Length: 252
Ligand SMILES: Nc1ncnc2c1ncn2[C@@H]1O[C@H](COP(=O)(O)OP(=O)(O)OP(=O)(O)O)[C@@H](O)[C@H]1O
Image 1 (tube, rainbow, N blue to C red):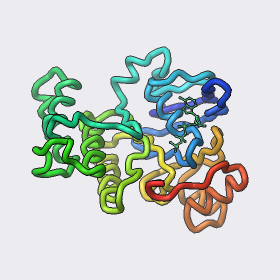
Image 2 (cartoon, rainbow, N blue to C red):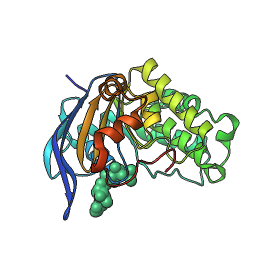
Image 3 (cartoon, rainbow, N blue to C red):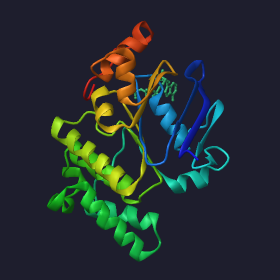
């Protein structure tokens, strides 16, 4: 059984058709990337799979559970990191992770394990004992990613995990994700408009533009199909004039 199964998913915001019937499935242990330009429908897809938004049509299942009818069950097995997330600024990073670990687990021992893992994943060292209000954007993002992963979800849903970060921070976050996926076997669904990021991280990618999936496959398959050197080239050839906005680069 796939970890996620999306079938003909549609979402209308009033007259705006954000998703026009998209389908894909994610295998267990896979890092799956949803890539496309601004406004393509990536965040909308991730919000539906995270049970925060209801689809207008179609269906989505996580580990066999319908995201609408069994939303509570789905919430227990996923972790979701929104694009514009913040942490409680008056807490230290450590206190924030501790608070979140206790929220997730009533069992003291389990909460302590989560906290230990969160501390390690954050890579923030001594700075974890400073207030979040003193953190750079990159440090805050690392803290939030540690929070999302320390619970060892079955499916981690990360919206633009490294968007807007400098090269070093973005690199470290990608390494954390890749290492964690391999060591824990956690399945990932992430979105990005950075084609190179996705190529580095993802086992398979779905290219999305204007609410439709225009290509789906492993980075290698897609590059071969278009005789392209990288996914940016694949995307431009696959979408061509369909792309209504330019493809963003790092942090665009
Ligand atoms: N709450 C909303 N109300 C109305 N329209 C919306 C709403 N949220 C998103 N949209 C529209 O739906 C479409 C898809 O938006 P979505 O945020 O899913 O795209 P995205 O691929 O995540 O873009 P980005 O890379 O900019 O985050 C866009 O046309 C957007 O303007």
